[in-house]
Length: 287
Image (cartoon, rainbow, N blue to C red; front, side, top):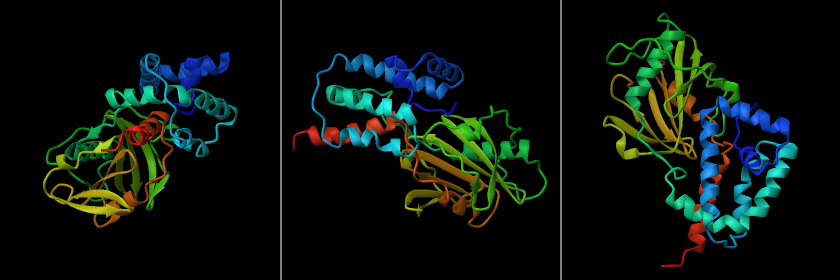
């Protein structure tokens, strides 16, 4: 079963048949991300029931449904669309107040752990690709081979993305990483790691010894000091913090980072936060 938050609301509403509900519950038993999203939705509903109804702006529902054209959902998508249309006007203001007051649903500021990314990259390369060939990126101190749990790269939840190839690199493995995923690529005995975490970059938390730049239209930062020496890039992509670190010198890491997809199928809570932020601006009195 594909990871998705799209069926969680239907599960809570009792709109799934017995086989669908059993499939979703089986998936939840092994998926921490979807379990947390289910708890967020359940928590939101409890609070929203106590809040008044307000007619939302005309564009509100269209923005919430913006992702439905990205991934066809068949009858499930039709059912979800109808449910959103029915509840949209009655809970818009309540969800708005909830989003603004709940830390669980608010955007998360991420301080990119660049040193940790270098270490995790080195430990993963050591475990899977060995020590021969390529100019391995070596952190300041020795790190043991990784023991991080594996992930199925073909079955990642939105908005994580795992392209099969990046600038000549081929995807070879995926791991769980603190707060997100770690993808490992290989090309000519060189390793490349991509770390994806949901949130916004805390640019002020980045260390000295780096360069600000624009990468495929995204704000980015390159680590120029040892040990990365230009082979580590941080950028923000539509609510996703991405760190790309690799062994190959030159512009190989930048080229690979620039090929990462920028159009992501954002999960419902993310679309909800964005729509509510716009609704808040529209409903707030002018200063």
